[in-house]
Amino acid sequence: MTSARSLLAVLACLLGLATCAGSHASPTTSATSAATRRAPTSATTSRAAPAAKYAAASEFAAAYVRFLDGAGTTSALADAASSVRTQARRAGSIPAARRRGTLRITQLRAAVGASDSYLLTARDHAHAFYAQLTLADQHGRWVVIELTPPDFAQVFASAGPRPPPPPPGSAGAEHAALRFLHAYLPWLYGQAPLRTITTATSGLLADLKAHPPRIPPTIRSMRPHIAAIAIKRRGPGWQALPNITDEHETYELVLTVVARTRGRWLVSNVSTQTQ
Image: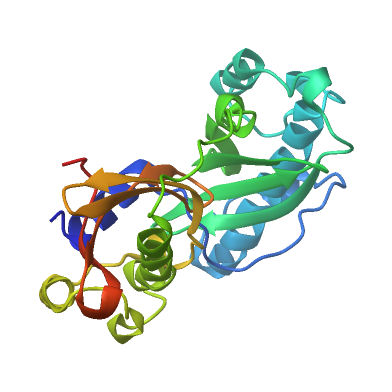
């Protein structure tokens, strides 16, 4: 069985620093003076650093969202290095055919573990777009030096064809798998205790208790859910293959579901590799 700790490590590697923490404020779209955005130059002004840095990030974010929405150009990206403007231009704006109403900033937060990075979320009527920006003090001014643009391919990915109907006789096993996941995922992300898992064998519960996940703050704030699930025969039991998404990444789990006395189905193994 792939341990929960290993799965958390995979998630953390996939996400990097791209999770949200810290205070939440609505970014302003008004012009910010150069004096407001200046980095501190002495101990007496050090407390102004977070406000000045956030002001620079906020102004850049507002201009960048306008560019993504087709209402601005990269030359309007305030306080940004030339390489950032070039990267934004290469990544491009949202294709006109894909736009669904006005794109608006819904969140701008400091990234956990990276005090000079911010996570930006912008939404229209149908989509959410995520970007990350990193600032640095350059000659007394906060400047955006790195940009991770939204992944348009992931945002606009097709849901694909409708899955085939479940095989005959699989309803009980699939129900047990879903009940297991509804308790297992909150435990995996540090949001619920192990005792909430009731559709697992005693052996699996003992294994999970012996190998609890190390849950970084980047994982705790996520809300994982089941995007899809397939089920197939595996020996005398069943194998459930759920796709899990936590708003940043989608991954697959593999559950082994076995029958117990009185026809009750229980999950005996969970892993990230098809067996």
